[in-house]
Picture 1 (tube, rainbow, N blue to C red):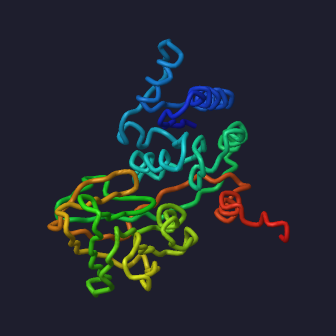
Picture 2: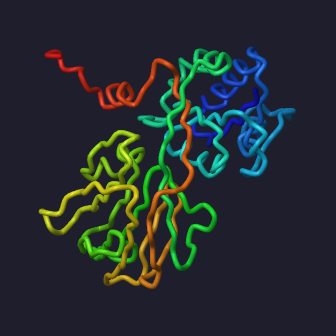
Length: 292
């Protein structure tokens, strides 16, 4: 077995976390490659040169590794989606960040997680992605997202108007700060903080969630992921912000955007004692009321 390790260094203890992970991998004879900037960070923290194999892009790991290990928070794990792409490589998320809906393995469980991985004692959660198509190809070949697409105002404090269509049929004109199109995985992210519902990963839906809508009777709506969602944007400003997970670009009203379901899915590695419902209870502290 061979693993790829990805991380964005964040704290003083991050190097120690990576060292501990590498030690557990070596104890189980699991080969590994490090993301090149991560190797450079470790060398600077240790002040010595490390003889570790590295990778830089998605082409360096496709068909060459068996698992991608993300060390950080949910944002770090979202970065690995662009590296894994359609390869089917499962992603293990180790949480050195804060909440961690996607990166759900706690730091004190790294040894247990690596042992389970080595023995094959894990499951895979297949997660739907959304795909963005536009007349200007704003996201290039990374036009897919595990969480959401967000359209947001940029140059002015005034709200924008987003005319929204389902399969070419008019749905609504959202007067708001912006609009979120979320996958089930993204339902526990930005959409949730804007009042969107939580939906289970296998629900085959998208969520359309307005950001600070002007009309109080406008609420999030759940639609089928077989629908194609298109937009026309207008406002006082000339430019708007389009964000696809962790990638953001400035667009103008001439850009036409369509959202649909991506053809491939992402595999999230799940330890046998974990599932989506247990993660919800843990992260949202459901059931901690003494009456339960």
